[in-house]
Length: 296
Ligand code: OGA
Ligand code: MN
Image 1 (cartoon, rainbow, N blue to C red):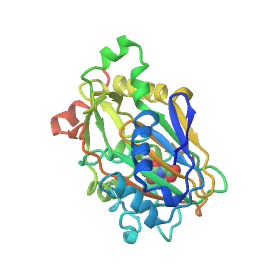
Image 2: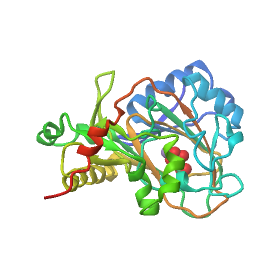
Image 3: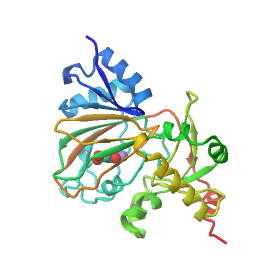
Image 4: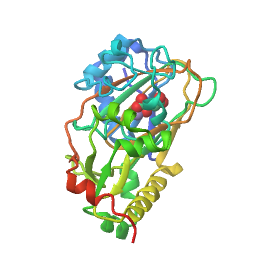
C-alpha cells in the first residue's frame, strides 16, 4: 500500500495519514526514517495510539531511553513513557514542564548520547495554549550568511541547568539546583554540530548559557540572536494538537517549545529513542570558569 506524505511547510514538517495498526509495518518504519531526514517532524493526525502501540513504534526505530526517569517530581511508575502534565497528582514539581515553555533540545544538559528521536502523543488537550513548535536547526545553519558561519566555526558553548531554569525561577535556589544536579551536568558543546553523516546544525536552546572564552555579554548576545534567527517562521512548524495526534521529531536537528498552558488536564505521553552521537562532553572546571567572563 502506498504511503501518502504531505509536506507541511517548505523547510519543515510532514503529515502521514495511516491507521495505528499499520504503524510498525516495515514500509512505514522505512518511510518514517527517510522522511525525518528531510522534514524533521512528522505528524500522524488523530492516530490515537495506546502506550503499548507507542512503545512498539519506538522500539522499531531504535533503543528506547527515558532520560527524565529521574526528573524531580515525575511519576516513578512511568517506566519508559514519560507523562508530561501539570497535574500535581502525577507530577508534584512542575520544573521540567515549565522548562518546556522555552526553546530546547531534549537531553542536552545530560552526559548521555544526545537523544535521537522523540515521540509525543496527545492524551488530553489543554483548553487553551499547549501548541508545540519546532525549529529546523539544519536550515538555520545552512541559511546563515557564509561570513557568519565562518565566525562561528570552532566556538564552544556552555549548556547548563541554571540557564534552563533561569526563565522559570530567576534564581532557582540551592535546594532545587541540588535536586536537579543529580541527573544533569554542565556540558561543553560545539555551537555548530558536525553530524556523523556530514551535515551541520546549530546546537541552540535556552540551556545554551554562554560562549566559552568570550565575555558573557557577547556570548549571550550571539546565542540569543541565533535563537531568534532559528525561530523565524520559515524554519519553524507549529503543531496545534487535535485529539489523538502523535508527532515524532528529529531531536538532533531541531529545537522545540510548547506554548504556555495552565490546564492541569493537559496530558502528553512521551517516548524517546536513544542517539549514537555525543556532540560535546561534560564541561571542565576551566571551561566553566572561561564561560563566565564578566564584561570589562
Ligand atoms: C518535553 C516537551 C512538549 C509538549 O516533554 O520534552 O518538550 O508539547 N514537551 O509538551
Ligand atoms: Mn522537550
